[in-house]
Length: 316
Length: 316
Image (cartoon, each protein chain N blue to C red):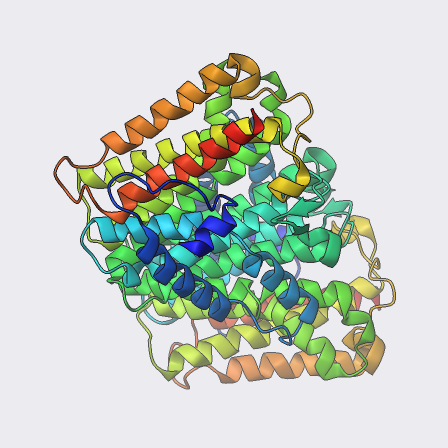
């Protein structure tokens, strides 16, 4: 627990309702970091600059929220989260790659990420583009070779991951953020961008976590929706916290979105927070009543929500 | 045949030894283009700029050498090439994405490709980076969802494709080409870059084509080696032709490699051509003696070799 609390810079968060995810998180954060370390190329692997760039993006001190969410979902559905480690790390590889690309000068032109200089400031734009391609590409390779999972599951996971990245996912979200976001004037238009830029990968986490546990029916769609709601809520909580944040606290560039409308600018902070709260309520409503209500996954949702909302409170 | 001949600008090539691949190529070029057209997003799909960029890269008039090579290999091993259409198109998606990235101002800064302005000149660097990610990503998704293939084959194909793109493949080749190529002084050093930048994807074509046909034994490794040899040879024939070429004939920027050593600059044109010829000999030696010696695949190798060597002769 100490680890995630420190990472969230929120060590005083009150214990979450329905049990705490402490033990689970302590154990599995370590497992995730270990596996990411194994997946990263060694620093001396040729070409060295590329290997170092991949390592820098992948092993920077992230919260690993997406990987944890994947493992917690597998666990919620009564399967061994250990079986979801490879897909969970694959999702973190995709996430790390997308951050490195988003930060490029031709995109968001960010200088700070996770409290460190952005990748392109160190390795150059060309190498960072190539290392992002390598990371996304390796994510698929690791899933395909993951013998711990049945063949059919692996194929479905490749499919879900591909959908989360492509023209209905991350890539489209970033394109819209860069080129059409300034024209958005309705909350639905802003949330469509959030759904692709953030929601799609969160939805992939929970859908993949459930698929590893063997789900193939409508409960899989519920888990997809669960992740999407979480992603939408977290994006708005993040925007709310960023409004009055500074670089040192956030560990990344803030307020460099220019004139892009957000739910906060369109609806005002109170109503934007209510929208995010409703997404969390809807997410929690996706759980099967009576099934594992005390599971760490449920606690994790409350815990993350509390931590994010606390960031907002501090700024008020 | 007319189609590929026109594309190769070599309509007078003599008939290749061991039968001509004409009929096969006529039929399957059409099938490849049809399927690529289906895989490309519609122009009106939102976000439009991204969809148009993906279409522009994917549907530009390429020779489709890699897709044909994949189908011809499946056919050589006595299986229906129709079953290899999806993986073959996936490889073309990866190839199209890699060309768009290589052409970026922060990489080769090319202005002309396949006789048209490079993608970034039309859609901007940011959108082209995102569309390349979308293309590579969709390639994996299409393979994973390809119900015409057994699950195990699809997973192997995802694996082979991932290896051809990643830190032992395209990405590493481009990184080396950008940052270490100028230091190469030995033929082996230049060929290591060729192996990654060109050979790896050619090897994936022939390995994947053979895998679709059901091969899993040492003949699969032979087909991998076969493709690698072809890729190495073709890269050097291409360098030889480029030496005295101009943009109009080549349809792409030429002689913009600055001071990067090539086999031609290190060994001289005659010896470089002999090295490439030996790669072709080695490639042809990978075929099983007595097995389908008259197959279109064998003829295709001779045919492409002749076409490429003719481009060199014209320049001499």
